[in-house]
Image (cartoon, rainbow, N blue to C red; front, side, top):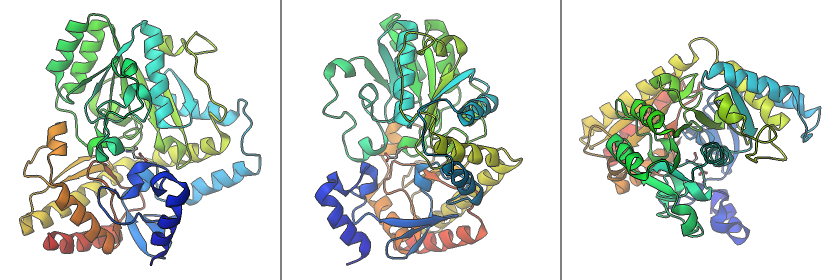
Length: 426
Ligand SMILES: N[C@H](C=O)CCC(=O)O
């Protein structure tokens, strides 16, 4: 029995399902989840000392690769000064300044501890600001696990077949109107019909939680226009896309300015973190300036700020995102060529250093139905073949993949060699 197998057995005694977040459990792909003990550059190393080229990147934060020396040094240096004060720090001021300078739609920003907290708080703020209760979200988009947002959700909720989770009161879910992603006509119709009941539209501008589904041309622009027409707050959930698909996030990539944005992952450099921010007029409604309450004992935690600041400074270096994008494009072109050569129906999507792999006859993936209609059995076999050859992909067909600055020619060759065998085996 491998160490991962015996740890998994032991874990199940005292941790539900043996994991602290469901998508880690390998339940949809089958087999035993890997237990990792070390990560460096583009690699994760499991408890049995096997190395894997990592395309999960801790689900997005590790854009520089693992254990980047400058990020570790920043954390070590902060460590000497204590772990948490529950009081304001210079680091969080630097973080707020930097975020607002990199993302022009941010006038003000508040730090929280996770992406879930960021989206939950942004929704409350939009409701408080507009005095309306309903929200619009899109099928397959995942915005964390708070009650209002766990309705027809993506990510693990989709993977495990609980997009509408028991435990979310009907009375809450009733206020969440879920529409098809990329269907602007449905948005316009709903806003016309509901007449000033909708507080906000929240959207993953690129739907990474249904495996990287890009917005249709004009969709995000159309949302902006519809929100302006109906006095609705537009929230871009950039927890996944922020600072990854472009330095200014998806809003920079597509040239659409939301009222509020939410962030997480990269801005903590691998430490638990989240943030929400946007227009001053709206953000001023947050306590202690305004009446909308939101708080957190560990918010703006100095270690998380140190790791996040070091990460953000490194990714602002000229050419960073172009190199990341180029690597990702080369990877996807290579995979597509191998799939085509073996006749396996397969297509990919990409936004900068984020990608989706779809075992599908369809060339273009635009909707929830396209994303969920792919061949899951084939994905699972591909996943395990790759794992055997030392390549770690997300253990779910509905999760986007992530590349990092530490991925280079060696990792490309290794991945494509593994994929050649995997496609042949399919
Ligand atoms: N897609 C999720 C977050 O972005 C995956 C992480 C998790 O649920 O543990």
